[in-house]
Image (cartoon, rainbow, N blue to C red; front, side):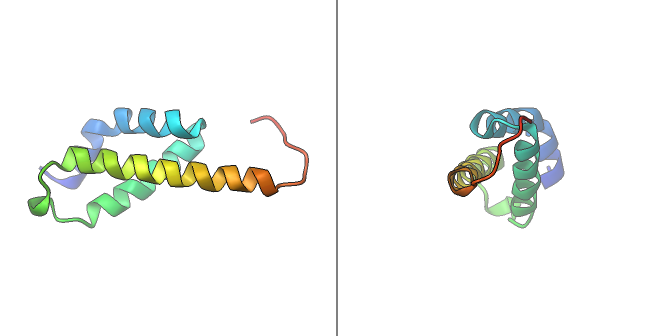
Length: 83
């Protein structure tokens, strides 16, 4: 199995995981793309469970993104518009 096959099999679940953490589909898609790039650089032969590693990458990147967005919201002084 290749990186892309594993990613495509789990894409819907990965998106749902990122979306639950971040709250917007745009941020979830960004995290998915960044996570795939990171995942594709790793050797499959060295992984015990590529699926679990992919979910770990998604979770960590989503949490990091959430913290970054939260900090930006705290600093922002302008008017917030609805999405």
